[in-house]
Length: 367
Image (cartoon, rainbow, N blue to C red):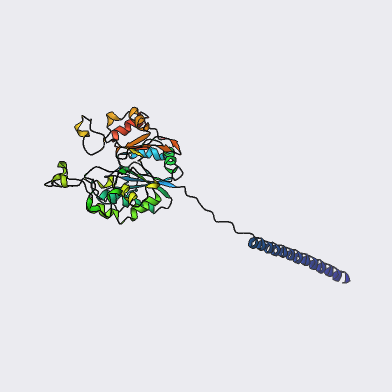
């Protein structure tokens, strides 16, 4: 009996020891967890917060295309954009109202869906061309990463690859605006005075490259543009006589082409000519006085056809390093990054067949 009591007491003692050990272990674990939590809070509140992750968007060039309908040269621009992987460009297209760029109307994914949805019907020689440009700018300005705004026609081609083009344009803080004094009679309408005095009247190519500041100036203009709408329109020509009957005295009708004067005159009016490089980056051939081809005479630029599309043509355009302005007796020597350079990054007007030949003969290399 005594032996049994002794064994029971011994088992009870062992159980108490085990229970005590378990309690001690649990207490130790709890204290360790509490200690870790305490010091982690001290570290968290004592250390400065890490700055939020900021994604730096590279400055972009907004390519603004003015087209009738589809873009017949989308394939050459597709090759131009192919090598660019860093999001340095955006694309906007102004076509006739209701036209859509999709898998049926373009084979380039870069242009699919890139038409602006508030386009208007554009008539050559009318202020509607300027309004189309302003619509493109309004859409492009919504993206704060667009730093340059480049106007192109549906017949323009690039002469260099994207990298060269991007660095050429972004290497200067100025806009590229072909601008010179227009001293010939017939373009300036005295009715514009005093809002637009004759000493601010300028002429030049509509294919400009604008900084963000100058793009905003053009979009917000409510002074110069209304004057152009009222008093600047092309003279009626025989080929348009059904729509615009010739006046009794044609000499009294001003021959004002809005897109050849508006941006240049606006910049002069705002006193911003010191902020521009006074030349265009798009080559156009206008001198038709010696041409024997009747189709190539008129007010429109030369259209380069299949037979014109040779490496020599492109080399000659790329070799131009200065532009002479007769009305100002000024020769504009072209420079980039402080060094003498070619004047033109783009050229017009090219047919689809001509561009295909240029690509096939490697006259232009875009990659």
